[in-house]
Length: 234
Length: 349
Image (cartoon, rainbow over all chains, first blue to last red; front, side):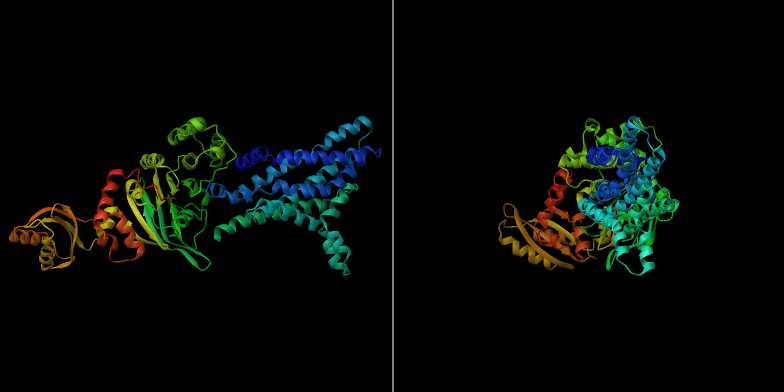
């Protein structure tokens, strides 16, 4: 796993994906920090985090699009799958590399917090809560993106499909609002990434939501392993 | 070292490999020969655990590849048809990655240096793989297979797309490796297999159609007595031709006689084929003595690997090429022997 993780981290920077991802992330989060927090004269960082949901949604597919699709296209997967490593090692190596880059991106909020601390008092509990909420959200999204990347050889197809999939997850709330049956509506709401994430930005640290995001991450990584395994049997 | 039992692979309805069994002993260089699409790569992909088999068993060094894939894979170095190279990396970074991936315990610097020296990529190891020529990429592919010194090397068409010099280099490298490793290599290039391998398995339509050394396979298949004879007639003109052909035809057991080109002034070659039980050399000699002719040359036509290959893969009982154009075939045969190393790369891509 270590070898794959390190190679993947290097590849992010060699291919330039890391620079694109980080600069867009910093630019947009900086804008939301300014527009949502600084200019409104508050020290609460929640508006920044609630705005970032949709940005994360569109940026994570850029991170995950080539992880497995490129291996398949260049036939480098043959090297990995015939090496004495397990499928979980391959998938988790790639997964944690993407997650690491996401954490690097996300940790910029501590710089914002530093700026705020200079201007006034920072509400550290909400900030830390939100930070972890975004981390869990990213963990789940990356697993979905990695899974979709395992399904295709085409990076663009992988990126577009991932954005679409994540966007559909985002729309769960509005689906639920249009369904009259209370039970179905509730069931859909319970699967909504957005409402669970927004809860955190409102200062509620909900353990079930943490479990939800981590479960999604686990399940999709499991699916990815299954896809790789199934290809051998094809 | 490797034992394959009743291996089969189906892709949907298509049977890619059917019931293949063979054994490879330690230190042997085994060649898989077969036309494109015969199932060579599929078999190799199963041997290395890249794809699963539909049925059958593969034991690598006594370990079943499906029961303990990690252990079995650690015995194998694999160079697939397309080397699995990350083209954005430098050779050095890539080989270091493979070293880590294979959890190699050998001293890193010394081992990587050995491998680079062996594959002759030491001078270029700082370069990005993207910028390398096909020949160098192939060598890097071979280098990654060699990392961690696996006892078994599986090489899928290792010389595809290389120039004649590179082919010679890779072949001599494989021969060298064969002293320390068990090697399985595949190719559709006959002289290559002949030049490198101790043993040959011919695969056709997913089945093993022959297994043995080139000589053994040839013996299994040789069932005609064919030869080329140069006979000097009495008149030394083309008038001799018909007479000689007629006379040979009258010998016992002759199946086929044909006068070939004029080789020396007024002297012709004759292609003679007898049925398999009769050795006609003596009666031919007697005949010539009676008639006052001289036999200037007599050459038995052995089956070349090429004949065998055609014969097996085309499913024919007669090797037509030999019958119709024996002269060309014999010449081709000598060319192969003289310059086997550097003349056949033309159509191997």
